[in-house]
Length: 146
Ligand code: DQA
Image 1 (spheres, rainbow, N blue to C red):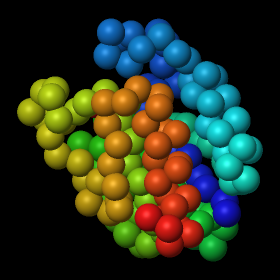
Image 2: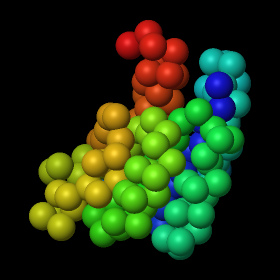
Image 3: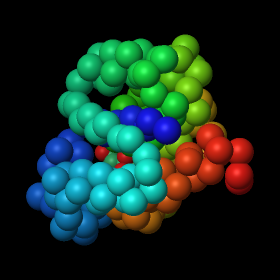
Image 4: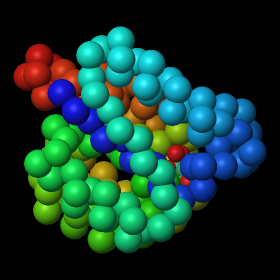
């Protein structure tokens, strides 16, 4: 099983960025947590972070035929990007959405998730543990053991 873990804009600044909301762990910590848990679960994983919408769309497109599923935190593009939604729908790979913060309790402009419309499940408000839960959920989803 091969999974792609995508992260959108400003998530490279985890640790520095609004620590009251996103915590003090860095993007490097996130990478390590994901790699370690995937290794333990026997999952092949690639991570990709970009501050650019088109780069995320390109990465989703190139996942077709190469990955079994996608875990995605589109960050601010969650609330704006029809392009990311369309890319997820185009490749039609099972995808799980993650948000570090609980967006449901934040500003009104964060209440829409375009990407989420193409995802089988969303984990939010769990900090970096949301990625772990999303990967485990996607694994079970792909194995048909949910
Ligand atoms: C986020 C929530 C988004 O609203 C925000 O723009 C982010 C991060 C989260 O992980 O909680 O950049 O996706």
